[in-house]
Length: 145
Ligand code: HEC
Image (cartoon, rainbow, N blue to C red; front, side, top):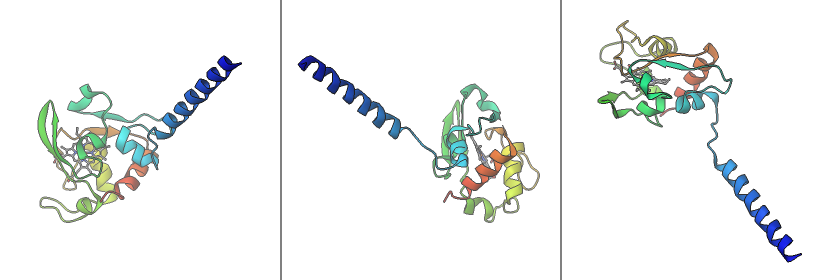
């Protein structure tokens, strides 16, 4: 009887730990946030990046632009600067081109193109994703300050 109780309490403990562990696993508030942090969509549709980072496997916006979109120095095979992509920064004045709009931000992400038609450096991957996913990602970028 005593043995049984000990086993039961152990079992209870194991279940408790499992529950706690599953609660603390990362949950994203939106699909856009999930894409930014993991380059995966909650719909399961593929999100593909092309560029020199292909060797890195799963790479997401956060790996270069940071959790808050502030950018900074990145070390990945070589050193480069990732720009600040907070919403105010993108849609504010730029030295070489017009402020970004929703449409031109999408062009930057998908085609690697700046508002003046020039190409972004190769460090910025070219992304392929479903239109809905791109819209969700834009909604998330709007929250970056
Ligand atoms: C491997 C690093 C890397 C990853 C991953 C990456 N970027 Fe970039 N991104 C850059 C760099 C570097 C530039 C600047 C290129 C240039 O100035 O020519 C850039 C530029 C941009 C720009 C244009 C900013 C400007 O000021 O012109 C936007 C918008 C952008 N990235 C959004 C994203 C989003 C959204 C993702 C995820 C889907 C992403 N980036 C993933 C490195 C990265």
